[in-house]
Image 1 (cartoon, one colour):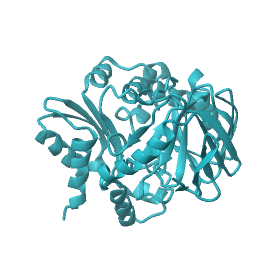
Image 2: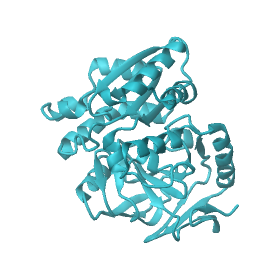
Image 3: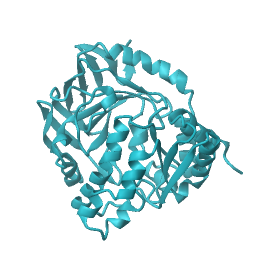
Length: 362
């Protein structure tokens, strides 16, 4: 029997997140395991009088179909250069949707650094178009056994968790997050204090953005782009690993001076961290500061799309800034890392404590 939540999910993605219009060409990236949601999404696109352009693979997280398998044999310079047909699809589509449903969440982890960099370089033009909101886009997940295993859940429990995080009253959640944005927008300096962490940066002149179910799904964050040369101090992601599929890096620790990471280490997979920080000139800049606000997400599950929205946490992304939030930094890297503030952490605005132990004080 079909799960009625899947149809509601597809309607949310097509009608609220993307607001698909008649005649649009909508790129939909998915894997075979996402078939129930994919089919409902295609139907929903049809009801809007638009055209689905479906790209299938087995990895479930590819930016371009079968890119990690292709990279096993193709030369790096070919991987990094978009083909003419890819340019047309990515530059001329009117909306973009990725349904992450991997068979194996570590697919591609064995590719060497040069090949992973080439894949990131090839994906950069579309990433830049999305971050600039040149087109409506959304990335989401469909529950698979691999993701449930990463989260330490049964598949059924993971399904309930996922649908509980996405099928919310997003208008009501948006009103709650507006209060946070209203408090942060006039501020100049943010200070984050937590375990082995004391970090400061400026948001002066930068207006925050609310993700109330229009960008990523699940939504549930208020985010800012710090002034690029303002970040100073130390941050340690000691509570949770830093995850950027297919890589998992434990114990990330970074020290900033004059807006740039000047020291970086990790207790596992440190080479992956350093590779991401050295991919280009902009990768060592703090591109985003986000505040997790989703009441349906209270635990870490090694999936950053969900983890960064966890209530009582913040996330900090090295690399590319987000133009709609005033970000100017450019990079092929945008890596969100989640910091838990629910046990002794706090956020200060211009010297005033506004959040302590993950709870707001205003």
